Amino acid sequence: MSTAEETLKSQPAAKEASIPVLNRVLDFLSSVRVGVVMLCILVVFAMIGMLIVQQNVNGFDTWYVGLTPAEKMVWGYLGFFDIYHSWYFNLLLLILSLNIILASIDRFPSTWTAYIKEPKLTATRDWLLGRREHVTVESDKSEADAEAEIKSAFTAAGYKPKVTPTTTTEYGVDENGRKDFSKIITRTTTIVFGQKSSWNRLGAYIIHIFLLTLFLGHFVAFQTGFDADVRMIPGEITDTIQLITFNLDKKEKFDVKLPFTIDCTDIQQRLIDENGGIDITNTLDWRTQVKINDPSYGTTTADISLNKPFTYRGYRFFQSQTIPVGNARTITLDLTPQNGGAVQTVEIPRLGSATLADGTKVEYTDFEPDFTLNGSKPDTQSADYNNPAAVLNVTPPGGQPQRVFAFSAKLPDNAPIAAPRAGYKWHLAAFEKAPLAHILSIKYDPFNAHFIAWYIGGFGLVGSLMLVFFFSHKRVWASIEKKDDGTTEIILAGEANRNHIGFRDKFNKIAERIGGSVSSPHVSEGPSSDENPPQT
Image (cartoon, rainbow, N blue to C red; front, side, top):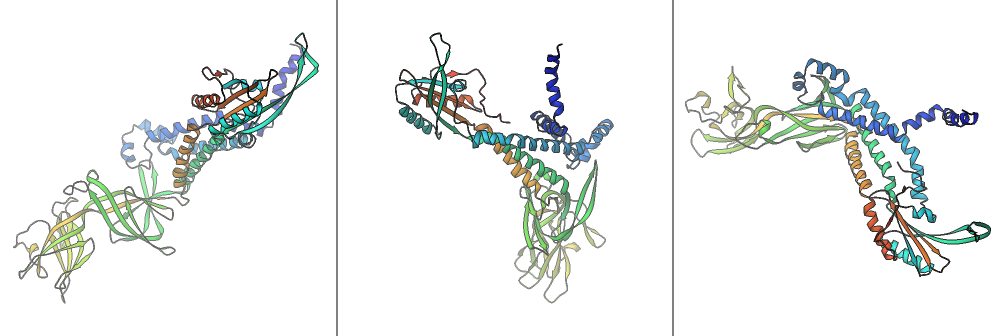
């Protein structure tokens, strides 16, 4: 090998070695290949998180018991049971986010300049003939008339025309066909340019913004938020929630104080079959009404249902489950006066009261779905409505409070527990079924990061993808030049960055308006790129 050849071959290596290490690292991190690889790996891990039940999902403990010892050991060691909180998942998010930021910083300025700030207004004849779509038209019209016609065609197609006169100088030829440097020919060409949807070139960077928003929102939510439960029983006031921590199939709860109190005022369960039980399969909706008393912000009321969560100061309340012990939201009592008279019917809400016509006050204090007496204390034998009874506190006018039981079943008059009390025979005529309590799930998100991630990042990403792929940046040029024989040559050319077939139809319509033949449009087989920098 000669010395010259060795020198030439060593030049690229020497040039690469002269680049600072930091620049090479940044170039690597900002490359499209790295971004695509990181995104694919992230998608694979996300799919693993969907296929393998995560430890914070209801039913994980039951599913975990059914795994083999090898699956428990391997998947647990790899962190697959809590993959979204694993160190490698967060590291991938960080690298991919860094790749997106660096790639945008590297490529956005050139894209902005080439397509938005300084679009390509002029072009040479050979360049125009190299476009994907181009048509050459020979016209007898003057240059001014041809220009006016082209501008009208561009405007009708939705392109705002920009006219740029250009002057080119070339050498003539002698009688032998060789260049004659003594003959200088000056040609004047008018270029008419138009474009539509140039913002589409910035679509990649809009997608980058929403991707970063999605990543950042989820990262902040996972790092700063927590999950908790709170039991809601009408009439109870609490300022404590149970913070949940997961350790595979073991769920641990810790009491955490709230900066406000929650007063449960009502719970309701809408059933498919009113005669059925209160299990999940017979349920249309759960509703929990609460009143929040906050020393800093006053009182706030909320109605929380399955499809209607409630957010307050970063705490988001969801319906989670019930304590499926039968109870009654309202009761309807039939009261027969002991001394005779018409039956009175009253309806009382849970923990509510009613006053009869004679002044007797009736308070609804408790409900037993399967009534029994545990000593002298009313109790239930099961959670089902086998022998429902309402426990009442009755105070006659001027008398002492008495405990009264109102049964749904018809009891014999000689039964001691069915004997008249406070001047009436008491019968539970009807009741609205409801569980003993609701369990609300609480997700604490102080920065509202989940909302930012899902609604801004998620929907923004879907919308930007639709805008990018359903629209395209379309550009057309028309070169007008007066030929030596007195005719006017018009070269119409155009290209789009996507949906080339749709653009061809629109391009042909413009060509028809200026008199071009479009039966067999010229299609360049060469690359359709121009002198503008490529877009990522």
